[in-house]
Length: 458
Image (cartoon, rainbow, N blue to C red; front, side):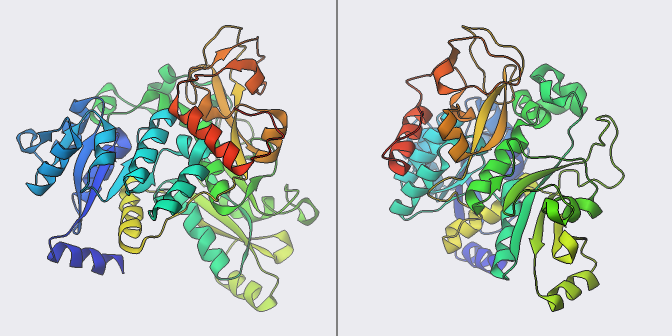
Protein backbone atom coordinates (compact mmCIF):
# COMPACT_ATOMS: atom_id res chain seq x y z
CA UNK A 1 0.00 0.00 0.00
CA UNK A 2 1.26 3.45 -0.86
CA UNK A 3 0.46 4.93 2.53
CA UNK A 4 2.48 2.26 4.32
CA UNK A 5 5.42 2.56 1.95
CA UNK A 6 5.43 6.36 2.28
CA UNK A 7 5.25 6.14 6.07
CA UNK A 8 8.22 3.78 5.98
CA UNK A 9 10.21 6.19 3.82
CA UNK A 10 9.42 8.98 6.27
CA UNK A 11 10.49 6.88 9.27
CA UNK A 12 13.76 6.05 7.53
CA UNK A 13 14.42 9.68 6.62
CA UNK A 14 14.36 8.80 2.92
CA UNK A 15 11.51 10.82 1.42
CA UNK A 16 10.89 10.73 -2.32
CA UNK A 17 12.64 13.87 -3.57
CA UNK A 18 10.51 15.71 -6.12
CA UNK A 19 11.59 18.41 -8.53
CA UNK A 20 8.84 20.52 -10.11
CA UNK A 21 9.35 22.49 -13.32
CA UNK A 22 6.67 25.16 -13.70
CA UNK A 23 4.64 26.55 -10.81
CA UNK A 24 1.46 27.90 -12.28
CA UNK A 25 -1.82 26.88 -10.67
CA UNK A 26 -1.04 23.17 -10.97
CA UNK A 27 2.56 23.34 -9.77
CA UNK A 28 1.73 25.44 -6.73
CA UNK A 29 -1.21 23.17 -5.94
CA UNK A 30 1.10 20.16 -6.09
CA UNK A 31 3.50 21.78 -3.65
CA UNK A 32 0.55 22.38 -1.32
CA UNK A 33 -0.57 18.74 -1.47
CA UNK A 34 2.89 17.26 -0.95
CA UNK A 35 3.42 19.58 2.03
CA UNK A 36 0.62 17.66 3.79
CA UNK A 37 2.11 14.21 3.09
CA UNK A 38 4.74 12.03 4.68
CA UNK A 39 7.49 10.23 2.77
CA UNK A 40 7.63 12.77 -0.04
CA UNK A 41 9.09 16.28 -0.29
CA UNK A 42 9.47 19.00 -2.91
CA UNK A 43 13.24 19.40 -3.02
CA UNK A 44 13.48 21.86 -5.92
CA UNK A 45 11.30 24.13 -8.01
CA UNK A 46 12.19 25.69 -11.36
CA UNK A 47 10.27 28.58 -12.82
CA UNK A 48 11.41 31.34 -15.17
CA UNK A 49 9.71 33.70 -12.72
CA UNK A 50 11.39 33.04 -9.38
CA UNK A 51 8.59 34.89 -7.59
CA UNK A 52 6.27 32.05 -8.63
CA UNK A 53 8.60 29.47 -7.12
CA UNK A 54 8.93 31.49 -3.91
CA UNK A 55 5.15 31.92 -3.77
CA UNK A 56 4.58 28.18 -4.22
CA UNK A 57 6.81 27.40 -1.26
CA UNK A 58 5.65 30.25 0.97
CA UNK A 59 1.99 29.37 0.38
CA UNK A 60 2.78 25.99 1.93
CA UNK A 61 4.64 27.30 4.95
CA UNK A 62 8.23 27.50 3.68
CA UNK A 63 9.60 31.03 4.26
CA UNK A 64 11.64 32.72 1.54
CA UNK A 65 14.72 32.93 3.77
CA UNK A 66 14.83 29.11 3.97
CA UNK A 67 15.21 28.77 0.18
CA UNK A 68 18.46 28.33 -1.73
CA UNK A 69 18.68 29.99 -5.16
CA UNK A 70 20.67 27.66 -7.41
CA UNK A 71 22.51 28.41 -10.64
CA UNK A 72 24.12 24.96 -10.94
CA UNK A 73 22.76 21.43 -10.56
CA UNK A 74 25.40 20.79 -7.90
CA UNK A 75 23.97 23.68 -5.87
CA UNK A 76 20.58 21.95 -5.86
CA UNK A 77 22.24 18.78 -4.59
CA UNK A 78 24.07 20.73 -1.89
CA UNK A 79 20.78 22.28 -0.78
CA UNK A 80 19.14 18.83 -0.62
CA UNK A 81 21.99 17.52 1.51
CA UNK A 82 21.52 20.51 3.82
CA UNK A 83 17.75 19.77 3.97
CA UNK A 84 16.89 23.08 2.34
CA UNK A 85 14.55 23.58 -0.65
CA UNK A 86 16.11 24.97 -3.83
CA UNK A 87 14.68 27.29 -6.46
CA UNK A 88 16.06 28.11 -9.89
CA UNK A 89 15.06 29.76 -13.15
CA UNK A 90 16.57 26.91 -15.17
CA UNK A 91 14.53 23.71 -15.29
CA UNK A 92 17.46 21.80 -16.77
CA UNK A 93 19.23 22.08 -13.41
CA UNK A 94 16.38 20.22 -11.72
CA UNK A 95 16.51 17.53 -14.40
CA UNK A 96 20.28 17.21 -13.99
CA UNK A 97 20.33 17.08 -10.19
CA UNK A 98 21.79 13.81 -8.90
CA UNK A 99 19.57 13.70 -5.82
CA UNK A 100 16.12 14.48 -7.28
CA UNK A 101 14.17 11.21 -7.73
CA UNK A 102 11.17 12.34 -9.78
CA UNK A 103 10.77 15.32 -12.10
CA UNK A 104 7.29 16.76 -12.64
CA UNK A 105 7.06 18.71 -15.91
CA UNK A 106 4.25 21.26 -15.58
CA UNK A 107 5.18 24.19 -17.83
CA UNK A 108 2.44 23.57 -20.38
CA UNK A 109 4.81 24.71 -23.17
CA UNK A 110 5.39 21.85 -25.65
CA UNK A 111 8.96 22.75 -26.63
CA UNK A 112 10.03 23.31 -23.03
CA UNK A 113 8.29 20.17 -21.83
CA UNK A 114 9.95 18.00 -24.44
CA UNK A 115 13.41 19.33 -23.53
CA UNK A 116 12.91 18.98 -19.78
CA UNK A 117 11.52 15.45 -20.00
CA UNK A 118 14.32 14.34 -22.33
CA UNK A 119 16.97 15.79 -20.02
CA UNK A 120 15.42 14.18 -16.94
CA UNK A 121 15.23 10.77 -18.61
CA UNK A 122 18.83 10.94 -19.80
CA UNK A 123 19.79 11.73 -16.17
CA UNK A 124 17.89 8.65 -14.95
CA UNK A 125 14.94 10.47 -13.42
CA UNK A 126 11.35 9.29 -13.41
CA UNK A 127 9.19 11.82 -15.28
CA UNK A 128 5.59 12.70 -14.41
CA UNK A 129 4.39 14.50 -17.54
CA UNK A 130 1.67 17.00 -16.72
CA UNK A 131 2.45 18.72 -20.01
CA UNK A 132 0.04 16.77 -22.23
CA UNK A 133 0.73 19.20 -25.08
CA UNK A 134 4.27 17.81 -25.25
CA UNK A 135 3.13 14.24 -24.56
CA UNK A 136 0.80 14.04 -27.57
CA UNK A 137 3.60 15.33 -29.79
CA UNK A 138 6.63 13.31 -28.62
CA UNK A 139 5.34 11.04 -25.84
CA UNK A 140 6.03 7.76 -27.66
CA UNK A 141 9.74 8.52 -28.15
CA UNK A 142 10.06 9.75 -24.56
CA UNK A 143 8.47 6.52 -23.36
CA UNK A 144 10.90 4.49 -25.51
CA UNK A 145 13.85 6.45 -24.09
CA UNK A 146 12.57 5.99 -20.53
CA UNK A 147 12.18 2.24 -21.06
CA UNK A 148 15.75 2.05 -22.33
CA UNK A 149 17.00 4.05 -19.32
CA UNK A 150 15.06 1.92 -16.82
CA UNK A 151 12.94 4.82 -15.55
CA UNK A 152 9.24 5.62 -15.63
CA UNK A 153 7.61 8.11 -18.00
CA UNK A 154 3.99 8.62 -16.96
CA UNK A 155 0.88 10.71 -17.30
CA UNK A 156 -0.32 12.26 -14.06
CA UNK A 157 -3.10 11.02 -11.79
CA UNK A 158 -5.73 13.63 -11.03
CA UNK A 159 -5.76 15.03 -14.56
CA UNK A 160 -8.47 13.56 -16.78
CA UNK A 161 -6.27 11.31 -18.93
CA UNK A 162 -4.70 9.72 -15.84
CA UNK A 163 -8.00 9.35 -13.98
CA UNK A 164 -9.65 7.77 -17.00
CA UNK A 165 -6.67 5.49 -17.63
CA UNK A 166 -7.09 4.12 -14.09
CA UNK A 167 -10.66 3.16 -14.95
CA UNK A 168 -9.66 1.68 -18.31
CA UNK A 169 -7.01 -0.46 -16.65
CA UNK A 170 -9.48 -1.62 -13.99
CA UNK A 171 -12.05 -2.57 -16.63
CA UNK A 172 -9.60 -4.45 -18.84
CA UNK A 173 -8.09 -6.30 -15.88
CA UNK A 174 -11.57 -7.66 -15.15
CA UNK A 175 -12.14 -8.72 -18.73
CA UNK A 176 -14.50 -5.96 -19.83
CA UNK A 177 -14.30 -4.48 -23.32
CA UNK A 178 -13.84 -0.71 -23.43
CA UNK A 179 -16.45 0.75 -25.76
CA UNK A 180 -15.65 4.40 -25.09
CA UNK A 181 -13.59 6.36 -22.58
CA UNK A 182 -13.38 10.06 -22.03
CA UNK A 183 -14.22 13.12 -20.03
CA UNK A 184 -16.93 15.68 -19.58
CA UNK A 185 -16.82 19.14 -21.10
CA UNK A 186 -18.72 22.40 -20.68
CA UNK A 187 -18.60 23.78 -24.22
CA UNK A 188 -20.86 26.71 -25.04
CA UNK A 189 -21.65 27.66 -28.63
CA UNK A 190 -19.11 30.51 -28.76
CA UNK A 191 -16.30 28.80 -26.83
CA UNK A 192 -14.42 27.45 -29.85
CA UNK A 193 -13.44 30.99 -30.90
CA UNK A 194 -12.40 32.07 -27.37
CA UNK A 195 -9.20 34.07 -26.86
CA UNK A 196 -6.97 34.53 -23.78
CA UNK A 197 -8.32 38.01 -22.98
CA UNK A 198 -11.81 36.57 -22.48
CA UNK A 199 -10.71 34.03 -19.86
CA UNK A 200 -11.36 36.11 -16.69
CA UNK A 201 -14.95 36.81 -17.72
CA UNK A 202 -15.62 33.26 -19.02
CA UNK A 203 -14.35 31.57 -15.82
CA UNK A 204 -15.22 34.29 -13.32
CA UNK A 205 -11.61 34.92 -12.27
CA UNK A 206 -10.82 38.08 -10.32
CA UNK A 207 -7.46 39.76 -10.82
CA UNK A 208 -6.59 38.82 -7.25
CA UNK A 209 -7.21 35.14 -7.96
CA UNK A 210 -5.24 35.25 -11.22
CA UNK A 211 -2.23 36.60 -9.34
CA UNK A 212 -2.59 34.48 -6.21
CA UNK A 213 -2.97 31.19 -8.13
CA UNK A 214 -0.55 32.21 -10.93
CA UNK A 215 -3.15 31.43 -13.60
CA UNK A 216 -1.92 31.18 -17.20
CA UNK A 217 -4.60 32.81 -19.36
CA UNK A 218 -3.48 31.06 -22.55
CA UNK A 219 -3.63 27.68 -20.83
CA UNK A 220 -7.09 28.40 -19.46
CA UNK A 221 -8.23 29.56 -22.87
CA UNK A 222 -7.28 26.12 -24.19
CA UNK A 223 -9.84 24.81 -21.68
CA UNK A 224 -12.41 27.19 -23.11
CA UNK A 225 -11.80 26.75 -26.83
CA UNK A 226 -11.86 22.95 -26.57
CA UNK A 227 -8.21 22.37 -27.43
CA UNK A 228 -7.29 21.04 -23.98
CA UNK A 229 -10.01 18.39 -24.05
CA UNK A 230 -8.86 17.30 -27.50
CA UNK A 231 -5.24 17.08 -26.34
CA UNK A 232 -6.16 15.17 -23.19
CA UNK A 233 -8.20 12.62 -25.10
CA UNK A 234 -5.33 12.13 -27.57
CA UNK A 235 -3.04 11.45 -24.60
CA UNK A 236 -5.56 8.91 -23.26
CA UNK A 237 -5.96 7.34 -26.70
CA UNK A 238 -2.23 6.90 -27.14
CA UNK A 239 -1.89 5.33 -23.68
CA UNK A 240 -4.91 3.03 -23.99
CA UNK A 241 -4.75 2.15 -27.68
CA UNK A 242 -8.01 3.95 -28.47
CA UNK A 243 -8.93 6.26 -31.38
CA UNK A 244 -11.44 9.03 -32.09
CA UNK A 245 -14.49 7.79 -33.98
CA UNK A 246 -14.51 10.98 -36.05
CA UNK A 247 -12.21 13.99 -36.26
CA UNK A 248 -12.66 16.04 -33.10
CA UNK A 249 -14.89 13.31 -31.59
CA UNK A 250 -18.69 13.59 -31.48
CA UNK A 251 -18.94 15.53 -28.19
CA UNK A 252 -22.74 15.29 -27.91
CA UNK A 253 -24.84 17.05 -25.30
CA UNK A 254 -25.64 14.23 -22.90
CA UNK A 255 -26.76 13.66 -19.31
CA UNK A 256 -24.94 11.11 -17.18
CA UNK A 257 -27.74 8.55 -17.33
CA UNK A 258 -27.63 8.58 -21.15
CA UNK A 259 -23.86 8.28 -21.70
CA UNK A 260 -23.79 4.48 -22.08
CA UNK A 261 -26.74 4.60 -24.48
CA UNK A 262 -25.35 7.41 -26.63
CA UNK A 263 -21.80 6.01 -26.71
CA UNK A 264 -22.87 2.68 -28.19
CA UNK A 265 -22.75 1.53 -31.79
CA UNK A 266 -25.35 2.94 -34.16
CA UNK A 267 -26.99 -0.45 -34.66
CA UNK A 268 -27.59 -0.54 -30.89
CA UNK A 269 -29.14 2.92 -30.73
CA UNK A 270 -25.96 4.95 -30.19
CA UNK A 271 -23.83 7.25 -32.33
CA UNK A 272 -20.57 5.29 -32.68
CA UNK A 273 -19.34 3.42 -35.74
CA UNK A 274 -17.00 1.25 -33.65
CA UNK A 275 -15.86 0.32 -30.15
CA UNK A 276 -12.56 1.38 -28.57
CA UNK A 277 -12.89 5.14 -28.91
CA UNK A 278 -12.19 8.29 -26.94
CA UNK A 279 -15.09 10.70 -26.53
CA UNK A 280 -16.33 13.88 -24.87
CA UNK A 281 -19.65 14.29 -23.03
CA UNK A 282 -20.80 17.92 -23.25
CA UNK A 283 -22.80 19.24 -20.29
CA UNK A 284 -24.19 22.14 -22.34
CA UNK A 285 -27.55 21.56 -24.00
CA UNK A 286 -27.96 21.49 -27.77
CA UNK A 287 -28.99 25.16 -27.74
CA UNK A 288 -25.36 25.94 -26.88
CA UNK A 289 -26.38 28.22 -24.01
CA UNK A 290 -27.93 26.31 -21.10
CA UNK A 291 -26.52 23.59 -18.88
CA UNK A 292 -28.08 20.13 -18.87
CA UNK A 293 -29.75 19.06 -15.60
CA UNK A 294 -27.38 16.13 -14.98
CA UNK A 295 -24.26 16.60 -17.06
CA UNK A 296 -20.89 15.07 -16.24
CA UNK A 297 -19.20 18.45 -15.89
CA UNK A 298 -15.46 17.96 -15.53
CA UNK A 299 -15.76 14.29 -14.58
CA UNK A 300 -14.50 11.22 -16.44
CA UNK A 301 -16.15 8.05 -17.74
CA UNK A 302 -15.68 4.66 -19.32
CA UNK A 303 -18.40 2.71 -21.11
CA UNK A 304 -17.69 -0.99 -20.61
CA UNK A 305 -19.21 -4.03 -22.31
CA UNK A 306 -19.95 -7.58 -21.22
CA UNK A 307 -21.86 -10.35 -23.00
CA UNK A 308 -22.25 -12.56 -19.92
CA UNK A 309 -25.86 -12.51 -18.63
CA UNK A 310 -24.80 -12.96 -14.99
CA UNK A 311 -22.51 -9.93 -15.12
CA UNK A 312 -25.12 -7.87 -16.95
CA UNK A 313 -27.61 -8.75 -14.23
CA UNK A 314 -25.15 -7.76 -11.50
CA UNK A 315 -24.25 -4.42 -13.12
CA UNK A 316 -27.96 -3.56 -13.46
CA UNK A 317 -28.52 -4.56 -9.83
CA UNK A 318 -25.80 -2.11 -8.77
CA UNK A 319 -27.58 0.68 -10.69
CA UNK A 320 -25.04 1.20 -13.46
CA UNK A 321 -26.61 3.13 -16.33
CA UNK A 322 -27.08 0.76 -19.30
CA UNK A 323 -26.77 1.08 -23.07
CA UNK A 324 -26.01 -1.06 -26.11
CA UNK A 325 -29.13 -3.19 -25.73
CA UNK A 326 -28.12 -4.13 -22.20
CA UNK A 327 -24.51 -5.03 -23.03
CA UNK A 328 -22.87 -1.67 -22.22
CA UNK A 329 -22.63 0.01 -18.81
CA UNK A 330 -21.32 3.31 -17.50
CA UNK A 331 -18.48 3.79 -15.02
CA UNK A 332 -17.87 7.40 -14.06
CA UNK A 333 -16.36 9.81 -11.59
CA UNK A 334 -18.06 13.22 -11.39
CA UNK A 335 -14.76 14.95 -10.58
CA UNK A 336 -11.03 14.97 -11.16
CA UNK A 337 -8.72 16.44 -8.55
CA UNK A 338 -5.74 17.56 -10.67
CA UNK A 339 -2.84 18.54 -8.37
CA UNK A 340 -4.47 16.92 -5.32
CA UNK A 341 -4.11 13.40 -6.74
CA UNK A 342 -0.87 13.97 -8.67
CA UNK A 343 1.39 12.65 -5.85
CA UNK A 344 -0.08 9.18 -6.46
CA UNK A 345 1.73 9.07 -9.82
CA UNK A 346 4.95 10.28 -8.20
CA UNK A 347 4.74 7.58 -5.54
CA UNK A 348 3.88 4.78 -8.00
CA UNK A 349 6.83 5.70 -10.20
CA UNK A 350 9.33 5.99 -7.33
CA UNK A 351 8.15 3.09 -5.18
CA UNK A 352 6.87 0.54 -7.70
CA UNK A 353 8.38 1.62 -11.02
CA UNK A 354 4.90 1.80 -12.54
CA UNK A 355 3.18 4.50 -14.60
CA UNK A 356 -0.35 5.78 -14.16
CA UNK A 357 -0.48 5.70 -17.93
CA UNK A 358 2.20 5.88 -20.58
CA UNK A 359 1.92 6.29 -24.35
CA UNK A 360 2.27 3.13 -26.36
CA UNK A 361 5.48 2.91 -28.42
CA UNK A 362 3.42 3.56 -31.56
CA UNK A 363 0.73 6.27 -31.28
CA UNK A 364 -2.83 5.85 -32.45
CA UNK A 365 -3.90 9.47 -32.36
CA UNK A 366 -2.63 12.94 -33.32
CA UNK A 367 -3.78 16.43 -32.32
CA UNK A 368 -3.95 18.36 -35.58
CA UNK A 369 -3.87 22.13 -36.06
CA UNK A 370 -7.02 23.91 -37.31
CA UNK A 371 -7.47 27.61 -38.08
CA UNK A 372 -9.51 29.34 -35.38
CA UNK A 373 -10.26 32.24 -37.72
CA UNK A 374 -9.29 33.25 -41.25
CA UNK A 375 -5.50 33.34 -41.28
CA UNK A 376 -3.34 35.16 -43.81
CA UNK A 377 -0.05 34.31 -45.44
CA UNK A 378 2.85 35.48 -43.28
CA UNK A 379 1.01 35.18 -39.95
CA UNK A 380 2.78 33.38 -37.12
CA UNK A 381 0.83 30.66 -35.32
CA UNK A 382 0.68 30.81 -31.52
CA UNK A 383 -0.24 27.23 -30.61
CA UNK A 384 -3.00 25.85 -28.40
CA UNK A 385 -5.09 28.28 -26.36
CA UNK A 386 -4.01 31.30 -28.36
CA UNK A 387 -5.58 33.54 -30.98
CA UNK A 388 -4.90 31.64 -34.20
CA UNK A 389 -5.57 27.90 -33.95
CA UNK A 390 -7.48 25.10 -32.26
CA UNK A 391 -6.45 21.48 -31.80
CA UNK A 392 -8.59 18.56 -32.93
CA UNK A 393 -8.13 14.85 -32.25
CA UNK A 394 -7.56 12.69 -35.37
CA UNK A 395 -6.42 9.14 -36.11
CA UNK A 396 -2.69 9.06 -36.70
CA UNK A 397 -3.01 7.20 -39.99
CA UNK A 398 -5.26 9.94 -41.35
CA UNK A 399 -3.01 12.71 -40.05
CA UNK A 400 0.05 11.10 -41.65
CA UNK A 401 -1.65 10.43 -44.96
CA UNK A 402 -2.83 14.04 -45.22
CA UNK A 403 0.38 15.61 -43.89
CA UNK A 404 -1.47 17.40 -41.08
CA UNK A 405 0.56 19.63 -38.75
CA UNK A 406 0.70 18.42 -35.12
CA UNK A 407 -0.46 21.13 -32.74
CA UNK A 408 2.69 20.73 -30.65
CA UNK A 409 4.79 21.98 -33.59
CA UNK A 410 2.53 24.92 -34.44
CA UNK A 411 3.77 27.64 -32.07
CA UNK A 412 6.05 30.00 -33.98
CA UNK A 413 5.36 28.41 -37.37
CA UNK A 414 4.86 30.92 -40.19
CA UNK A 415 2.09 30.48 -42.75
CA UNK A 416 3.06 30.26 -46.41
CA UNK A 417 -0.54 30.75 -47.60
CA UNK A 418 -3.97 31.94 -46.48
CA UNK A 419 -6.00 29.43 -44.44
CA UNK A 420 -9.78 29.51 -44.07
CA UNK A 421 -11.42 29.33 -40.66
CA UNK A 422 -11.91 25.68 -39.71
CA UNK A 423 -9.40 24.40 -42.27
CA UNK A 424 -6.82 21.87 -41.13
CA UNK A 425 -3.25 23.12 -41.55
CA UNK A 426 -0.70 20.87 -43.24
CA UNK A 427 3.09 20.75 -43.03
CA UNK A 428 3.19 22.15 -46.57
CA UNK A 429 1.42 25.33 -45.45
CA UNK A 430 4.00 26.43 -42.87
CA UNK A 431 7.65 27.19 -42.23
CA UNK A 432 8.52 25.36 -39.03
CA UNK A 433 10.75 26.63 -36.23
CA UNK A 434 13.81 24.63 -37.25
CA UNK A 435 15.79 25.19 -34.06
CA UNK A 436 13.03 24.02 -31.71
CA UNK A 437 13.86 20.98 -29.58
CA UNK A 438 10.44 19.41 -29.94
CA UNK A 439 10.73 19.45 -33.74
CA UNK A 440 14.06 17.61 -33.57
CA UNK A 441 12.60 15.06 -31.16
CA UNK A 442 9.49 14.65 -33.30
CA UNK A 443 11.63 13.93 -36.34
CA UNK A 444 13.50 11.32 -34.33
CA UNK A 445 10.19 9.81 -33.24
CA UNK A 446 8.84 9.63 -36.79
CA UNK A 447 12.07 8.12 -38.12
CA UNK A 448 12.06 5.53 -35.30
CA UNK A 449 8.44 4.47 -35.63
CA UNK A 450 8.04 4.79 -39.41
CA UNK A 451 11.55 4.41 -40.88
CA UNK A 452 10.16 3.86 -44.38
CA UNK A 453 8.38 7.21 -44.33
CA UNK A 454 5.47 7.01 -46.83
CA UNK A 455 3.78 10.12 -45.44
CA UNK A 456 4.31 13.86 -45.35
CA UNK A 457 5.81 14.77 -42.00
CA UNK A 458 8.21 17.10 -40.20
